[in-house]
Image (tube, rainbow, N blue to C red):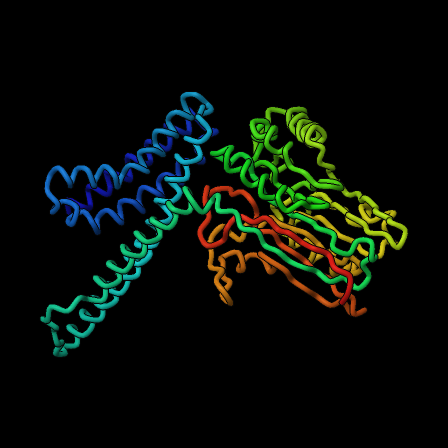
Length: 449
């Protein structure tokens, strides 16, 4: 009965707090249900480990209790500061790791919570079965051995799994997020003019400068790209997370990127400023203009539904770029390949830069079967997965048909079309990588089949 009144008191306090926030800070009320869900998840897990914590002694018990509730306390402090100041002012690296730590903790807690929930369901079903048999006056054998019960096994498994995940995600933040991997590919194209044989293309994608805590890490990535001595560099979108001003602190480093011929870029879904509540349309347009100006200062050519033709006398090669086009409803569809390809129809080889790989599946292979090779990004490989020898897995594959690496498709005219999905150089949300490392792609075009 005491526990019932405790839970009832908590629920009443939450309801009262919600109406207070709704009256005083209506624009921030959307955070409240999220915090409530996190609190009850925390409380559910805490109940299962509380006795173990308290058995560690008063001093260690208090310390472990504080550490357990620290992430939720960090969220509350952040929320209160946001409500009071309307916008929390942070040191950028501190902000990245602040939210990253909270993310890591709650993702790690999710595993034991799911195992505990499964254990409680099994325990509840066994209790109901026991009661049903008792009503029928059946003899119920009771196992009095010291064996670990199924629910205890699930609980222990969940806690161990959550601890391992927590450790891995922390390492992913401080190490693997900057462990750049160069993927090298040779692509044979039968229609490639001989003068372009051996053309070296470096592709990078999804830099997401708003998530970089270290300038030195970006400088290292640019240095490694330059060491590859590319003829062309393709950047397939998402320079920033939300606003163009995230890139200003890195402009000097980005300007160090080199290619013997040209650097081309396209826009990703994050580049449009669609994830910000702008005070006016003019403010959003100004943000876009700042991005266009930045690309000009860098010397990167932004291909917004347009192309560039290279002709060395023995045939043309076209570099085509489209704005973002995503198959999912929440992603913009600014890309117009029909417009972008005008003037490049007679090119013997056509290379396309398109941020979202779903564009290849839904548009390119359906209506533009003369596109030889498409360069995309967007998925980040989910920043989490397994890539060892012949094993390639990530949660991204349950969302995107094409999520990392090279894909091929033959059209009815026997035209081979290829798609390469870059795993991204940066990160967003979780400021780290586990299994799916940040990628620099070197693509060499070769004459032949």
